[in-house]
Image (cartoon, rainbow, N blue to C red; front, top):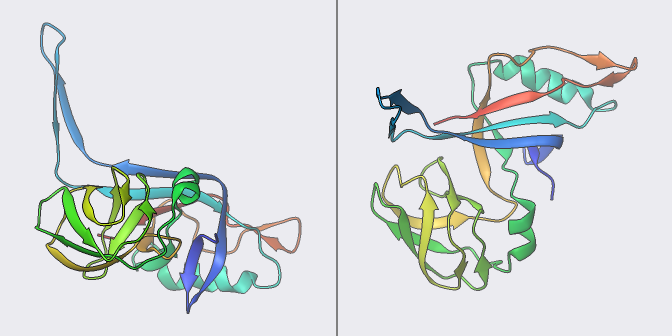
Length: 196
């Protein structure tokens, strides 16, 4: 499993621990006089990743050029990190098809052989949003996903270590060279925002 910044068919900078994947879903809250809390969630959602990358020496120029080329404004691809527990429970090696309506929290899966565990990131072929499975799905049937579908699907989806997520560098990422120990380039912690 190699997760990281993906360019020209290869990972040019591998993700290393600590790695954090969070769901950003705006919630508006207010407290009443009796201290009961009212909360309303937005329908918007995006994934955010905070991670270090493997320090580089011989191909340090790749990440340097990548940072300069994309800056804070241009989207690029990463191989989306999967939950290790989901990877261990996964037995499906197929390329399944899913059908679902816009706004639905479930899709109907066909052409699947084996287990797609809960907590697996998936990507449908007809749009770039990344979803997470909420329940395990052995073989064919209904698959619960989060967030609800942004567009209708009737297409294949990826669900193994081949899920490509479009992201942007967050505004606090240093766009340039950062060297430690003389010749080792280490840009430090990168925050990546799903490009939706």
